[in-house]
Length: 68
Image (tube, rainbow, N blue to C red; front, side):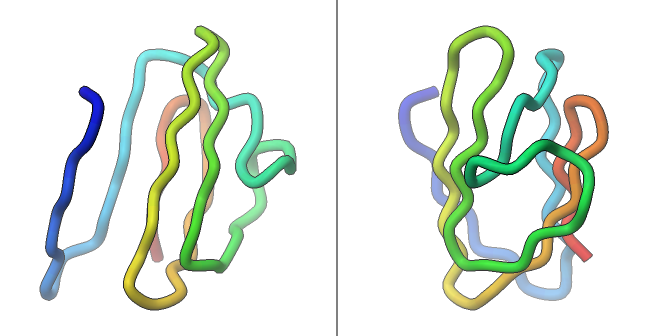
């Protein structure tokens, strides 16, 4: 998928992949990160860029990025 847009209202974003997350904004996965732009590097060579309209807190575990 090249581009996707979603509008969340009263929902909690959760992104999943079968691939391992190697880094988020250049940091190792795990601790929560709060920002409005996320650069996610996967172990298959893919890079995801996700934007939020306001700062969002995402934590990573395996192939899951979960907002809180």
